[in-house]
Length: 231
Image 1 (cartoon, rainbow, N blue to C red):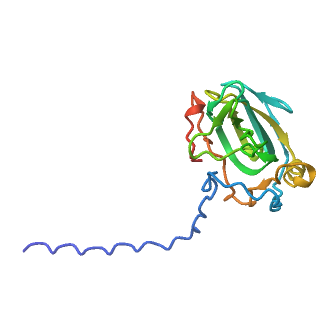
Image 2 (cartoon, helix red, strand yellow):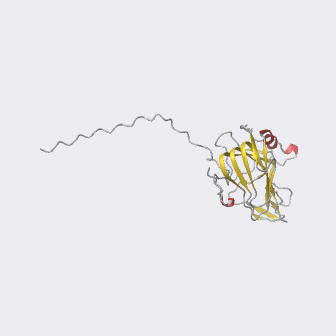
Image 3 (cartoon, one colour):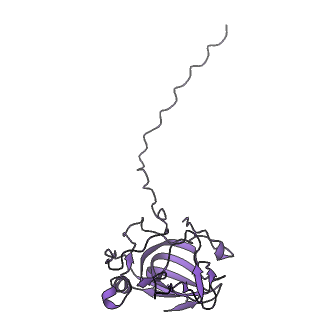
């Protein structure tokens, strides 16, 4: 007689998972985008105070980057100022943005200041911080957020900013800064001679915006870093 078929062993039911669901990582989910200038007389929101043990810069207390390939490496925990100088009188046209490369940790775009956006009028003839009818204008890539005179970032980690000048002539100066420095800048308004109050972008959380042109990679040509940051 044929042997009886072996009875199927019941499959073990999966034991209930004891691991808690991992919170989604929200860092990098909000990236800078084109935005409208706020009302010049509107005071900014309060600037969240993030921890600051200090940022060290490979260029010391001030790094001036006027040429393609210039770079500065920043390390630590604290605030950084990038101050813009756009020089269409030397060369106008398409501006190739600097890029943040080799990020380890987190970098946020926390505020904008300096008393003006670079496209604010400086007279009645169409002259702005981007240029004028006599010199021509520096033109940002489509989709790039308009920079202000002073842009403030918060770093917790390491990152290198690379100057990618091709076409329009520009320079950026990079300074480690404190929360007090940032707060004083953005709260300076038209009553003190500024064109406008600054803008606070930081919400104190990981959903605060990250800058465009930011990457954890270190490409041979930093001008290839995508506008839409993925970190």
